[in-house]
Length: 146
Image 1 (cartoon, rainbow, N blue to C red):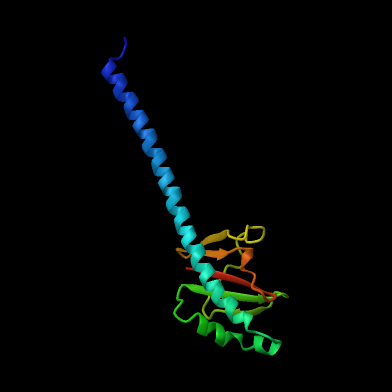
Image 2: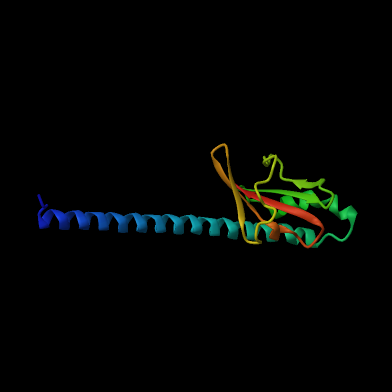
C-alpha cells in the first residue's frame, strides 16, 4: 500500500530540516571553537611580546641572571599566564613560580608558527604557542594560558 502524499511530504521535510539544522549546528560549533583559539593566540602573542621586550634588553650573561625580577614585573597582573624560558642548552633560565608544565610538551615541534598546542590538565584547558615563540635571543619561550 502506498503512503499518502501528506505523509511523504512531511517525512521529506522533516529529514531535510534535520539535515540542515545539524549542518548549521556543526558550522556554528567549529566557528566558535576557532574563535576561542584565535583569542588564545592573541593573548599569547601579547604576553609573548612582554617577555621578548624583557629579553631584548639583555646585553650580557650577567644580566641574564637578573631576568627573573624583570619578567615578574612585566607579567604583574597576568594571573593566567605561566612562562618557562630555557636556554639553548635546555637548562631553565626562568620559570613562573608555582607553574605546572606538562612533562612532555604536546606536539609543538613541526607546528606552523601560528598554531597552538592545547591540552587539558586538572579540568583546565591550556594552550602553548608554537615555534614562532622563539625570542630574538637564543632561548626558547613557552607560554601557557589556563
